[in-house]
Structures are given as C-alpha cells and as structure tokens.
Image 1 (cartoon, rainbow, N blue to C red):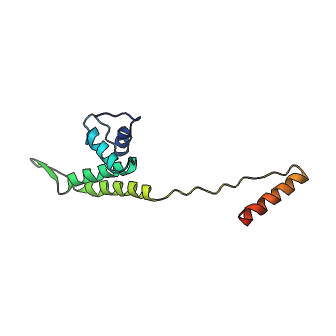
Image 2 (image 1 turned 90 degrees about the horizontal axis):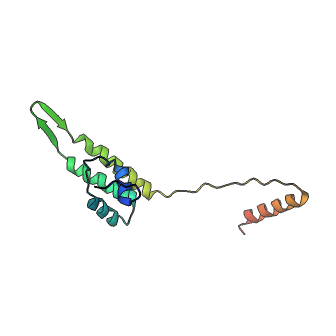
Length: 123
C-alpha cells in the first residue's frame, strides 16, 4: 500500500480515509476503480465505498458474549458513495461576475453606457 498524495491512488485513499497501516484496499484495486471510472477520483472513491458496504451486508462479529453488528455501516457507506456520485453528476454553475465601472470623465460615462447597451443587446 502506498499513501502518496501526489498520485491519484493516494488522493482516492484520502477521500475514503484508507490511510492507516492496515489498508482496506490495495493500490491495484484502487487503480482498477480509477480505470473503470475514467480517472474520476470521486467516482473511484464511490466505488470503494460501495465495495466496502458489500463486505458488511449481513455481517456480525461474535466473540463470547460480545457482538459487533456491522450491518449499520452499510447505510453510511452507501450514503457516502451517493454523495460523491451526486457531486460528480451535478454541474457547477459559475456565478455571474459584475464588475463595477467608475467614470472618471464624460468620455468614460459614454463608454460605460455603450458597453452596457452592447451587453444587454446580446452583441
């Protein structure tokens, strides 16, 4: 396992919090998800979350009287995957930028008025 943030595999590891000495995924597995998702870091991370969720379906650990129910993790992992998928699917809208113009002379007032008229006419 490598954890190098200058690589796409490392960036996916960061997104899924798979940064410990005992990783959930191998570099090859993450690279495979990156390849399948055309290099999208977020979609590869979503694939990792879905894969991890599949591991916990109907899984309970029992040791003597102690029981750990891992089934509850499934919903959380799937919600994380969905949020990344929605993030990728939702286009980012650029805000309209309004730049203030200051008229320092009568000629500047005329130029500002012409610019605004051209902008409003669609030219």
